[in-house]
Image: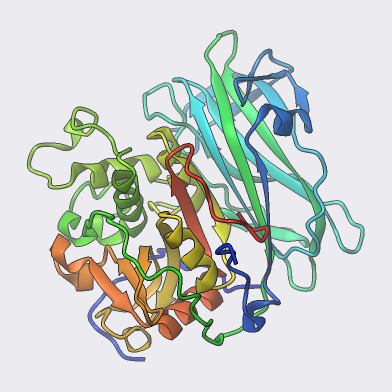
Length: 422
């Protein structure tokens, strides 16, 4: 089980010491079990069970109410009654699992929202209760709930750490079901639907260091991902996670969206104000913000925002940089979650308890070319592109976040051959 994430994830400060290109894991990482289940088509959705939902055009959507629910938004204190329809997956058995992350691609008309839940059976044969992994709305009108993770769910089986189901010590899931609960204001016909649902399950051993994977030698390229510095946005919109200093995740998402030419239009971002550079970063921060976490680094909420701009997006874990090389060779950048001290990452110039950056390429020797939105703590987009040593990067990534990445692509992009985790 990987270490739990720190809050906030990005804690920047002064410099401190302290065949086909299928990327098979190296022996050093072979013990990392990561499995991905996805529901993205009519066939996929029909393998589950709907109660008031219908399947149309590849989406699972609200058809009719089969129950009602009263929800008081903890962030606005607004109480509303909703009609509810649900879709529940078939039972999936990925093997002994210690962590689970669900991500979704959805759309919600004003007043509607989506709740994602999961339950399972432990390897000891005990059924768990339902755990809420997020309540999410696309918009922020007065009719909408505020996007939120849900704390206080811990019991003897598991707890929810912002966006991740974390099993208790010595307990693992052997199977699970995931559920989508679609909500709309009672008596209305407002629409909400889910286009894609992804569940990444993993069992990653505790460790502080990993061996360095051998480069494949087939990904010596740098993708033309634009460079945006979060430092340029320090002090902007502090109501969204204290401003740019903590906006590593939305800044990374904005870079990847613009790489795919899917970023928001200038009219969409006009609300930010003409005095702000790279307004798409501010816009992404607002749309990624988790009102319970009080930050913009909730992983599935960031990929959900990317989908709302037209991308296919999900969260998964990779076992080594060899797997990341497969994506770069296919022209797909990755947003990766890392943690390190300045002494552990040569050239970074800062320390962080949790940070997101974009893998954009590899050198011929296998070192990692990144767009690092921290930009060496300098307010300059020109400082974003940098190269980190392969061994240092893998040790900041695999033991710290379990190799977590966002995969964000333009629809129709062909992914690399998969060993089961994408």
